[in-house]
Image (cartoon, rainbow, N blue to C red):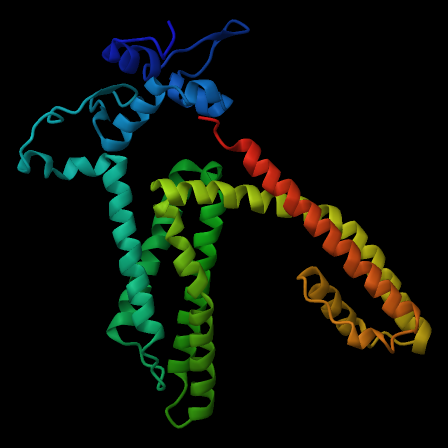
Length: 333
């Protein structure tokens, strides 16, 4: 029976999409899995895009279908789903519903961001920890323990981009806290060392600001606009990684040529830092031609022009490929 043409929603949800089945492979039963999980694993877009499948996901997201307390592998209807009163829905068990979990995590992240904003805008020259900073680091330790708990229970299979993103943020904050303790360990008479480590601590704290705001995108993914933009951003980042992987071979060739010219000019390689910085500027679409006019003329400036041209042409082709890829992946409804 087709998912689209099935009218019995109870049968579709409980017996077709959410009931776990095993199949025999080489005479051995496979681990039980339901159609919702299998469609995601197989990237079955026709099944995922069907109205019945989307309605099932909506019911799971809102908590109208919940796991059975006696058998977590099966799902049952939430008993008070049709109750229009407020108090029956004010139940701590409703935190199991993904929509409420995401809302709670979003509110927690906003509070976390507010604590960070208060801490970075109220710098303590003496290096002492105020109440806002103490709360900020308590939140951070709580998030770190949460990450370690998930890693302990689920293993390394759950590690992904957002885990690395959050762990980078927490690492910067822990470095900032460690430097603050180092500053506090210095004597009040040694003001120079105390101010040095205190300033370094706040520099690490300020450096983490983009990560704090980027962290909100993890919980804004449930909104249609942010979800669509994150998909586009993911495609863009993937295309950029492929572009730089191909470009690195060309970059090594030009780098070897520039270093060779540097050695041939004065038998010393003191301009290596200048060469690396100039090539990085060209990759970032901000080339600097002034320094190459006196660099092994006329070969240096000619080679740098060629390098800039190759980088810009490759970047334009990568952008065009990305735009056509996004347009091609858009739904044709």
